[in-house]
Length: 43
Image 1: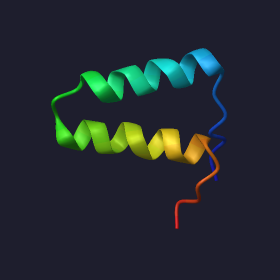
Image 2: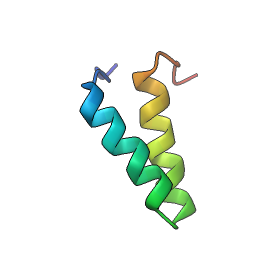
Image 3: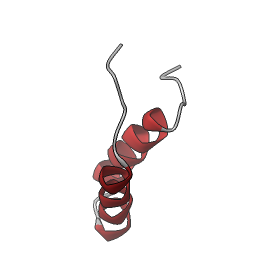
Image 4: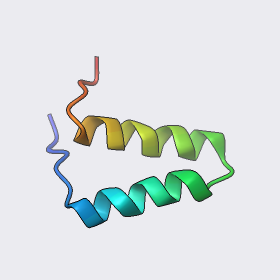
């Protein structure tokens, strides 16, 4: 499995991008990456 460890700044940038985007698919993908970085599993 890939390593989803990000710095605090990177996570803040991803969360800001999640709030900015109007494309639902892009928002879902960003949310998935942030969730994986937060310890959620892909299952």
